[in-house]
Image (cartoon, rainbow, N blue to C red):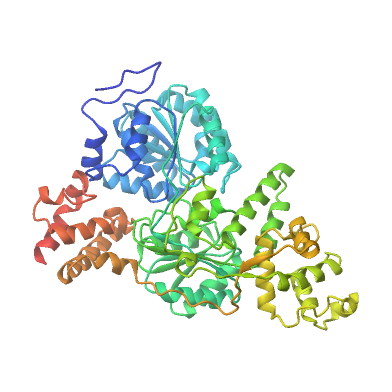
Length: 613
C-alpha cells in the first residue's frame, strides 16, 4: 500500500515494492542482513544515517527507495569517478539515472539536467559544491526532490577521517527542503562522528542504524619497520597475480615504490595529487578494468573506488587514525572473498603524524582529540591480543578473537623488559629530554659520534648503559614504550623523546614494564593462497574452464562499453552461471545479480557461451 504523504513527504508509486525492485532491476532474490531495515525506514519518511561495513551493499539501500518514490532523489557524491561508476552500473541495470559533473561536456550536463526536469530520471548525482550553489538550489526548488542522499557521509563531520569543508553546507538542505527525506551513508564513523553527522544533516532527530564494523574476510597484520621496500616485496610474494593497493605517505615514496614493484615484475601504477589529471584518470581506469594491477598511491586514491576483487591493501606508513585505516583497508575484499591487509610502521611515522596534527592550524581541543586518536592507532599497532577485537572495541563493538590476524596466528610472547628499558630512560633523562630516538639510542649503545662528543654525552653515567643491545632492538623498544604511553614524542621539541608520568614510575619507582618479545629479524609471512583460486575451488574443472570463457566475454563487453568489467556482471554472478549453467531466460534470471534489463542486454551472449561449453 502506498504511504500517504505527510506535509509533502514523497508518495510511493503503486505496484512497486522493495522486493520487486530488488529482483527485477538488480537481480537479487533477497536483501542482505541489515539492508531491509534501512530501506523501510527511508520509505517511511524517516531521516536515516546508516553505518555499514564496506561491501555490505549500502548503495542498494538508497537506490531501491529512489526507484519507488514518485519524485527524483538527489545523491551527493564526493568524486567524479564514484559518480561515473554508480551511474554506469545503474544504467546497465535499466534504472533511470543521470549526473552533472565537471568530467562531462557542457552539452551533456545540459541534456542530463533537462532529463531530470522532464521527470525522466529517478536518481541524480551531484557534487556538494554544485548542489549547494545558489543557482542549483533555486533549480532544485522546482524539482522538489523526494530524497537527498549523502554518500561518504563522514566527509560532513570535522571529526571524520576525510572531512571536506564543502560538505558542511549540506546541513542547510533540511531547512530548505523540509519535506524531503534525508539519508546518509558511510562505512567509517565512530560515535562522535556519527553524532556530528546526524546533528548537522537532520538536527539529531533521525534514526542512526549501525550494522557492524566487522570484516571477517580481512586478515590484519602490523610489521615494525626495518627495510620498508624489502618488507613490502616479501608481503607481495603471497599476492602475485592479484589486484591490490599499496598506500604511501608522500608523492616521492609513491613513485619510488611503484618503480621498485615494476622492477620486481609487478604491473604497478602510481597515483597521487601531483600527477597530471589525465595520467591519474588513465591509471585509475586501468586499475578498474585490468586484472592484477597494483595501485601505489597516496590517500588521494580510494574514496569511491568500487572494485570488488581487491585482494590486498598494504600501508607503507602509519595512517592518520583508526577510522582512516579502517576506511582504507575496507577497499579490500568487497566481493566477500578473503583479502589481506598489512601496515609497516616506525617511529619516524609517529613523529610525522604528530607534526601533521600540530601544524594543521586547528584549535587546541581538536588537536588534543587527534592526538588521542593517534594514541588509539598506536595501541592497535602494539596490541598483544587479537587486532580485530581492538578495532571493534574502538568502534563500540565486541567480538571473539578472529583467529586470522597476525597476533591470533602467532601470539606474541610477553617479556619483562624493565631492565632493558631503564638504561634507555636514563639516557633520555640525562640528556635533558631534548633529543630524538636516533641520538638517544647512540648514547645508550656507547657510540662515539660527533654529536655525542659535541654535547659531552660520552661523559654521562648512562652512556653505554645498554651497549649489549643492538640498534634494531632499541628502536623496537622505543616504539613499544611510545605505544604503551611511557614515552611521548615532543613535536614542538623537533621529535625529542620525553618520559611520561607512567614512564617515571618505571624509572624512579621500580614499576615493571612488560612488552612483546622483540624479534629483530623480519618474521616470515604466512603463505596465503589466491582468494580467486579459493573461490574458484568450489567449482569443478569444467566449471572453471567455463568461468574463464565467461570472464573473457565480460572483458570484451566492458571494453566496448568503456566500463569496469564488474559493472557488466560481478565475479559472483559469473561463478553462479558456471555452477548453474542456465539454458534459458528463466534459468538465467535465477542467477544472482541478473535482472531483467541486464538479461535483455547481455543474457543471450552469455547463454551462447554456456551452451557451447
